[in-house]
Image 1: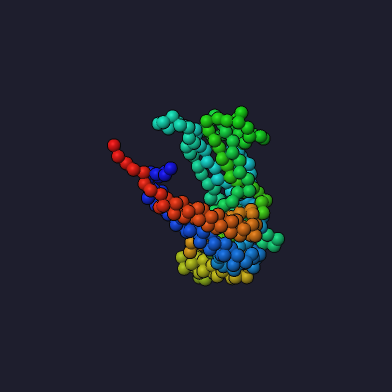
Image 2: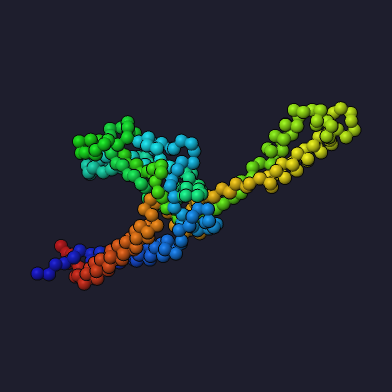
Length: 299
């Protein structure tokens, strides 16, 4: 008995498009794997400007860690999604996302002898904890229960992904540093305020015509001296170097993960070969569909 396939050309076209998409994903993951392997793991203190791979413990940038919006758990990064169970026009149930948000706050990455800031905006973050639970309100009344069970189902589903405080994290991104020397104008104003507390000393130093008050020109001379002294103090002081790892400007991947460098590379390789296997399956489906006779249509 011959089986006729309805619209084999459409099936072949869909499978062919899927094969091309999988081929693109395969080469993309291979490039990412090669890029991760070729980017050496550096200590934060010795990392140069540019694309880097660094690792350390995640810590909050502020004195107190950020509480996760849904559970209230302390973390350095969070992402959440709230979905509501609804019925479509055909009466079928589906989950519809009603609210989602992602943290954009800086956090600290610290290794044994140095630290830097991480700006997670547009990063691909692998969380150290994922929780999903259910409730009856659009926002949960508390964190996830100790045990998730079908008895606790509700019309709302809460999914929260976290990077916990103290998690061992590997970051791959672009390191940018700047020297933090402070505000010269503010330092000059502070020094002038200090000098004003000793009016006699200020007059002895800058009252050139000895009339007991500072003219506009004499006050301007005092301001210039204060600025020069502040500049000299800054040159003699230690300059603080502030480093931030953020999204690369050239489109290279920006990854934050608790997996570690070796496991991150293995993940990219696994994903590449998964795309390859799916691509082969799509090619087989495409070839099979092209060999099928179309179903005959008629009255």
